Length: 403
Image 1 (spheres, rainbow, N blue to C red):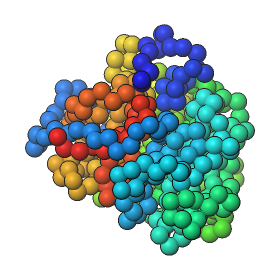
Image 2: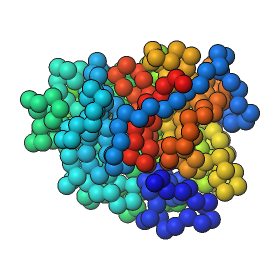
Image 3: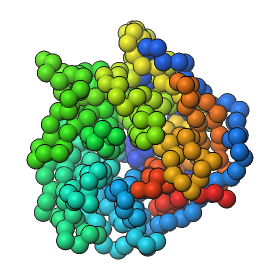
């Protein structure tokens, strides 16, 4: 049974909280020319009214945190936090994991296997990438290859490409890994944990925590892509694409409009979605100066040069509106044409399904979809055809369909 979301004033010790609730319990971006962020109000129904439903495609999973698929592949690859990637093929969950790195990770705090990404040319290269926390608690990026069996990875092929030190706290590891439309690999790291980013990592350009990273992984090791904003600058890490994020849970690319959507978990008051062109380098999303569009650190609250989120919502009394955003995707599949262009998202504490539309620099038309109770929403996923899925703390994966 899914755990009950607790008011902030009555939460148990952090060590007892499930992963995404920790994202909120352990406590961001702001300014520039971006419009004031939209906030959920009275729902605006879609232009063509229709209803959504959820269809179970897998069950019995252990903390399913992510779902993806290689290009052109009908299978679903599901990440389980304890360290496994499972496959759904022809409608059945295969018993043997595609990969099992449970000996290389731990599920202490928010740690574990958090994401997987397949090379855009996976059918030819057999390469894929894992984002996890190692047994030291550091963020790890490994590359692996598939074996001669298409449903099993080569367990001896793992190569560590990047280690991001994450000392102290076990929370705020970020966890998203995805290839952008430019063919480069993007990573979303958390600020390192603790309340209020006590080390100031998110604003420190010499630290990889609290950042969006962009890497060229086409070679044996990673390289820095042309256009990374801090390449060649002393005291600044060349891997950084954007800064000032608290704990991005999840980000995604809109393949049609070529926009990057970043859902960043707030400290204690606001959840936000930042939307930027995929070519826009060097954005500072504001944390810890800002939480959403509001000042977090009043002593240093200068919004100059900071990116104000286009969308946010307040927690409200006892987190009535939610407390930990779960980012999703802009729908670009074929099965639900009425949903085209809408960004779907949820909140771990409330388990809802909502969407908004981003047009001409403005996010609006917030819609709440009645899909019933599904527990705490851990993540969304997208298959190779662009259809979307919701992953729940009840161990189930649901495909979003039309009622």
